[in-house]
Image (cartoon, rainbow, N blue to C red; front, side, top):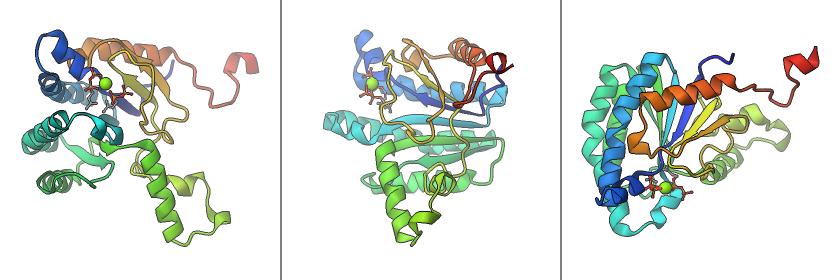
Length: 235
Ligand code: IPE
Ligand code: IPE
Ligand code: MG
């Protein structure tokens, strides 16, 4: 039986459809999705999961209609202060996974405040992938490696990892994607090289503790080989 994942990444997909299916707006769906973050973190925290990444907004999500993008940015701005205080109360360290480029100045300030507020917390690390793209992250890392003057022969996987946004996170053990799509959509492409994937048609605002249990149960049945052999066939 595989132990509890140390790092779980969520692709919180299906907010828009959740709103549309109820005759509401896509933005209502995003609002419901944001509301579902707090109870999810609480469940993960009580189970003892140490690292969680939430995919909140991708570099490709800028391609959506301007009113949806603005709506999402406003929503994040609205909840930043209260939610970061809640995280702080629970000893959670918040990390931003992604770039601040293109984010409105006020929201940048709120993000930086939240990072500072929670920086010394140790009970859980929550990475929020916001304005994040896996390919963009790798290009950014390569740029900084070149700038550092690292010689080609000095570069290895361990060193490369230090230039990623997730330098101090362990690799992702389990990716949970809600909303029914069977793809990674550019999330943590380096860090998920050997991750287990769990897909569910449940839309993100409906994802709950019971669904989390199902995902953890599925994970516990997986055999991770990392290119090696399983114990039985090896014996
Ligand atoms: C995920 O929900 C949240 C973001 C990408 C910001 P979607 O907005 O993609 O919801 P669907 O997939 O259209 O239902
Ligand atoms: C992935 O969802 C990004 C987030 C959940 C933030 P998308 O809805 O953007 O993914 P695609 O477009 O279906 O691949
Ligand atoms: Mg989607």
